[in-house]
Length: 159
Image 1 (cartoon, one colour):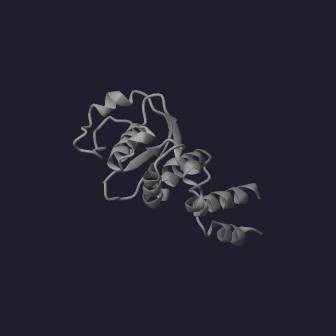
Image 2 (cartoon, rainbow, N blue to C red):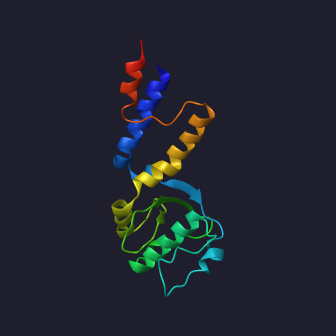
Image 3 (cartoon, helix red, strand yellow):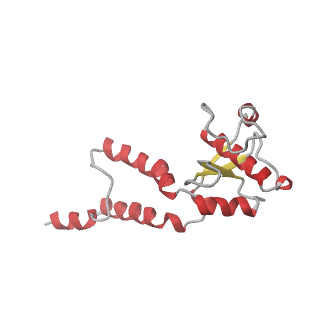
């Protein structure tokens, strides 16, 4: 049954997402006009990402740039307009930032270690896959997303 194998793949991905390389599950995008939004932040107060109307990937990029300064890694280069980045949601952390970007090359080890420690796999799965699948399943009138015991329940009703 193809639907059952799709269920299995979704469940397997959800269960194994924590073991995947961060670069493979991070959102990829380009950054435009970071300078326009950076003026809303001050150098004296790093990690201020609660400004309204700033796109999520730009907040993540500003957080990266703040971490570059915080870890005294200016030689690695900050994210600028036109750069291609990856970014992730973060769990509660000492800096109170909700997301962080990275370039995927020449990133300071301290930032990559920070991201690895605080990455929010659940939020990434929910925003990147679960919400889209729920909308798709709803449109197809297939009911909700599969749960761990869905395979057993389906077997019970098969004759």
